[in-house]
Length: 337
Image 1 (tube, rainbow, N blue to C red):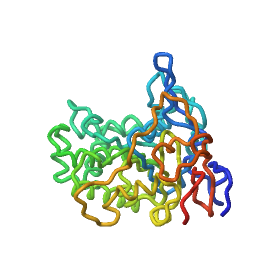
Image 2: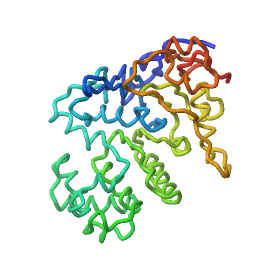
Image 3: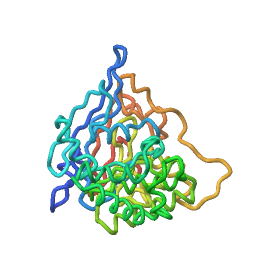
Image 4: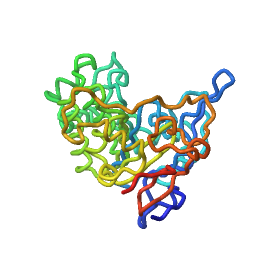
């Protein structure tokens, strides 16, 4: 087994540069004299046309990380590191320049479409405004494009839906509208943050099928974020697992599911019975609680919950290392492949 420090540069494959490259990203908040560490030294990359899944429990830093990419964090956030999209640095970019990228080349589908859509504005207006603002389209052209997009994302009776308000649509239709809005300007990368968590199982499957279809049609890159490993595994070619603000494992999806190397990843898989088609009376869970982000980081953050913990784990934080080719793991005692 080879073990080398894992950075976005060291793990890049030969060929064109990744569409997104994140290096040593830190996100911290000052609160009443204390510091909350939300994201800690995250490095990752997304290739053109790839779907990267990011999975972890609530509070693991997934959403804070991608909001940092887009410049959407609260004002008291302190960000360090580098986020390069198509080789352009996003961190520190002036608001006007960042706004030209957001919604056109780089877009996001949020978890709750009801709070993301403007409640008092008709659907057609909200879709059309994206093209008018980012592409300088005329209003008549924007409305034709909005109708075409609703048909593309399989919103039934699309012409009528253009005239309706968000509250008149079902949850599944609102999420289809949000996906359509994210695609209006033909972006290179779409970030989907828990896009199915508020939907029932049947509608969830339909939304995932839609994302798969859109990728096949346009070849865009996708970052899919979820606490549900089963959802991520159904779409992503590669998965990064986050815990306490850090990436603790990253590998191609099939490799990660068949032979997880980090104990946390293994426990997440056991807690996702849908991956195995099992029907259980009681949903398993990872025992214990994540660390308090206000407390200093000493040793491995997962040590208090880990079945393989040693004294070294409590004293020394394991770095993210590249092992066996493309896989990465941050663990002093990784599981055998």
